[in-house]
Structure formats: structure tokens, C-alpha cells
Length: 190
Image (cartoon, rainbow, N blue to C red):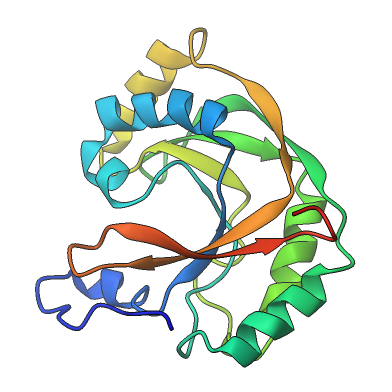
């Protein structure tokens, strides 16, 4: 049984959307370590909440049940593991933040489509559903700081790739720190 935060009174309004959890792609430990060092240095607030990740699903609209978990496992059973590349930092002049571009986009979009077709998600898309795949370094900084940080890191930030062979169901505790509660393998990979 999955436990959820009982007291969200100290959370900001936007944080409450995530009470029932989300499904993320977590890079393997060797990649996560490198990215989390940058996240801790340049945006300690968000780094404390969740390790390096690629956002995948909308927040769940109901509690994760054994039936929903089985439905998700079933829709993922035919998805083969795939390689993801993180190799270009970007920052926008319209929105604050610095993140890695993630490619290719197509398998991530397919996963989003499959997940959001299950009963754990509302039929109406969450406002962040169509954002391009990315792995954030810093988000709670100004646009000016974002552009400066991207310029500072563009030649030194680690780049690479990793095999995406599983997804993580992450739920925030009362201090809004996300913890993995379930792992969903892709295909028969795990």
C-alpha cells in the first residue's frame, strides 16, 4: 500500500497537484550523480525535492491501486527499452530555468500517450503535458540568471546517454520530497 502526505498545509498551491504522485524517468545512478551535483549547486531547493529526472506523466488523478499499477505494467509490456541522450543545455528568454534537451522525443511521447490512456490519469491534460522532454538543472532562478548559468555551463556540463528500461512512480512526502514507490519495467527488461 502506498502512503501519501497527510498534511499538505505548508505546501504551495502548485505542489498540491502532485500529492498523488507522478511517473518519471530516472537516469541510472552514474548519470544521476553528475546531474544532481549541478542541481544541488545551482538550485538546491528543487534538488532537495526530487533527484535528476525527466518528467513523463501528469500527476495521478486518484491513488495508485494494485489494479492501476497492473494496467500500467500491461501497457508498458510491449515497449522496448530505448536510448536517451542528454547533450545540449538550453535556457529561454521567456521562461526561467536551465535544462538538458533530451532526445529522441518520439519514445517519450509514446510513453506519455500510453500512460495517460490508463485509468490513473484524468482525461483532461495537465498544463505541462506537452512540454518537450528535458532534465532540469535549475528552475527557481530568474531568466537573467538562467541565461548566465547556461553560458557558464555550456562547455563543461556533462553530456551522454543512458538506456531507459524502467519508469519510477514517485510520491512526495509531507516535506515535498519525492520517493520512489513503484518501478515499472519496459518490456521484459527488469
